[in-house]
Length: 261
Image (cartoon, rainbow, N blue to C red):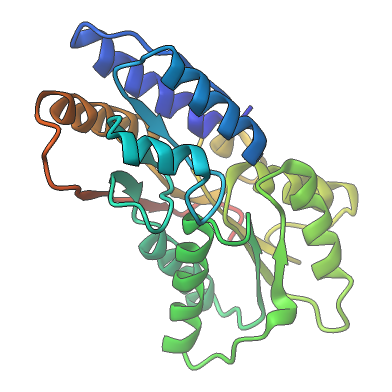
């Protein structure tokens, strides 16, 4: 349901087909149980390798088993700590830093941040970029402006509702995922909150609907197609040479400044 991953899979599929491989897609739905089930299923089906976006910070038992059995795999978008595996990721910290710095340069000092899943490396890195920009600008960090949205549309709606109900609410919100950003914008529309006059909004992920929104959404643009391509190419290299040293590839991001800030 997340367009980011749909585009990532398309990139992986194009690279795989070009090399004579096909793709099997499994959706964990951000649940550990489904991740475990699908990883074990794919291993039993003797797939050549896997691209995995792990649902939690630590490696699940199924992923640890892959590493122990030396089944080739590459982490995409996120990585599980404690596992020496290849990973193709966005510059999450750098993107979050750019987003927060942009809001600060627009004069905002009370900046709310909507985070995804506790412990996920994407969450940690984007949170780090947010805090780095605040610290650099001499703005005191306050945890009352930090809310969790679980990478869901409804989570984004609840998050902005909580932030706007504060005695001294933020004048800007940084949403760290496209689905949560949709929820943030929906709730602002329902509450008749004027953007950007009353509340500035910036998202992480720049998708087709971003420019169609009124006003157009300011967002950190990732390159999910390139992530899918590069991850597949790395997996194909590992299939040819299983003893390659694990590497981490960071794909650059860009800040698209539009009407919501």
